[in-house]
Image (tube, rainbow, N blue to C red; front, side, top):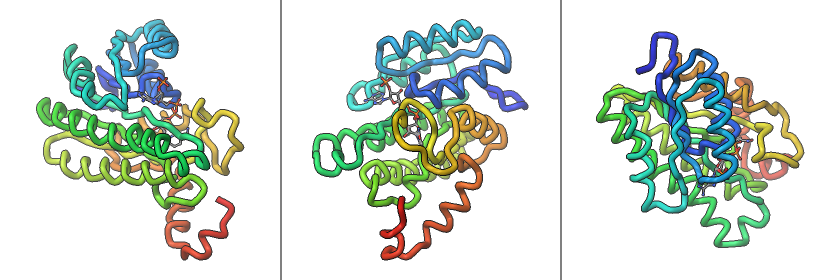
Length: 252
Ligand SMILES: NC(=O)c1ccc[n+]([C@@H]2O[C@H](COP(=O)([O-])OP(=O)(O)OC[C@H]3O[C@@H](n4cnc5c(N)ncnc54)[C@H](OP(=O)(O)O)[C@@H]3O)[C@@H](O)[C@H]2O)c1
């Protein structure tokens, strides 16, 4: 169970090699030894390194296979994650940025983004929601993006998958509220992680640690929605209402 300070006893990272997810795990691990962390990710060096690092921080780490595109395997992934006991906080962090100009002309790449960023999170979100309803407590942290808040020409395949993702998890939060389960939707702007390596930085860029701080505060305060950094909320509320002919001309 989560204690009064908002610290969980167990943490599930769906996307257990994500830089942001691991920053969240480090923050929770720093609050005391004995945290059970389930790293659900594709097997490989990145997952092993993450498990070793969190183990050295005093966490009891379990590794579980997750392949976002293999929908038939998702139920087994979630079963394995709950086999060791209740999950207090589950972070949905897997995702693909893709290459915007290739994605909208290559049907296979567009489908991959839609499956990894939208279909798989919906499928796993329902599986997680059912489990958390049954245990009558828990928090789901869904890593959305400001890119989904107003989809723009420059990355509309990614943006549209995040728009769907965002809407689904906001709705799931409403549905689960009466069952004692909370969903936190997180909308970061540009985050310096391996996902954005080599790209030119957007204004208001943040680090994975900044996102982790916002996640921990949002979980503790039982927030439904947070922007990272906070001023991004006001930027986006302005951009959302810019008329389309003008929006098209903005350097976004
Ligand atoms: N970085 C940003 O600027 C930014 C901004 C807003 C939102 N976000 C969102 O935040 C989340 C975490 O991003 P991040 O910056 O931490 O990126 P990251 O470090 O690149 O992590 C992405 C994760 O997705 C996993 N993944 C990709 N395809 C998968 C598949 N088919 N099956 C299973 N796992 C798969 C990767 O696993 P492998 O290790 O196996 O490749 C990796 O764990 C993503 O949903 C992203 O869209 C990021």
